[in-house]
Length: 223
Figure 1 (tube, rainbow, N blue to C red):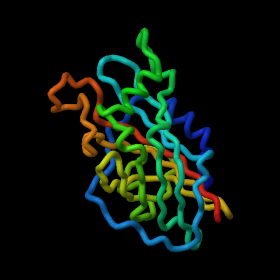
Figure 2: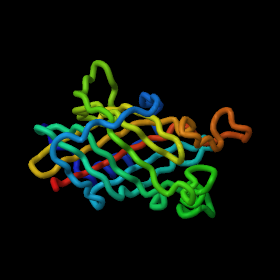
Figure 3: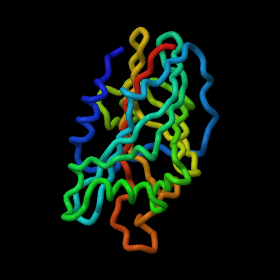
Figure 4: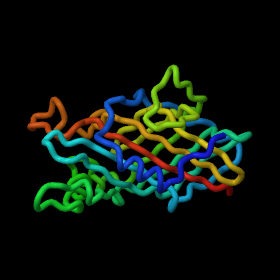
């Protein structure tokens, strides 16, 4: 398999992109987790991260930042990822200072707002979770990929706050000896998970796009 982009390089490439794409990932009801066949690879929490990017319709620069992966594992059978899951610490959400252009605003101010009840309500829901439900070969004729070099199509249950939905998106997956890496970039509609602050149809004067671009770079090491 092709080697994937190193985690740091991927983070930089995602940060360099423009506003979130409008190519939303397929979203369905929660599904059964994939059977955990094969060897378990523990998630390296230092080398793994989730990236996010959202667009403000008020003429301000796109917001973007990082959230830490806290634990999890991927299962590999005969050189292919078959299942797995990982947890995300929502209290670790940070906004890149470069995304803040308004006078008097700090990235920590935006962090606090995103962690509040308007968005992720991290005091009540401190973690998010992704559980793989299926892994299939990627066919570029059937599915567009926001990240070049996709090798597989991943489906999984994404839990945000108290909602769990199944999403499907292309990803780069590589298994090299005792290491496995998975990288992806896709777009979700945050309102599908009940995160509807200032979205279309809300009673407020909406200014923040409901489309959010999510990227992740996950590395696992064989136990």
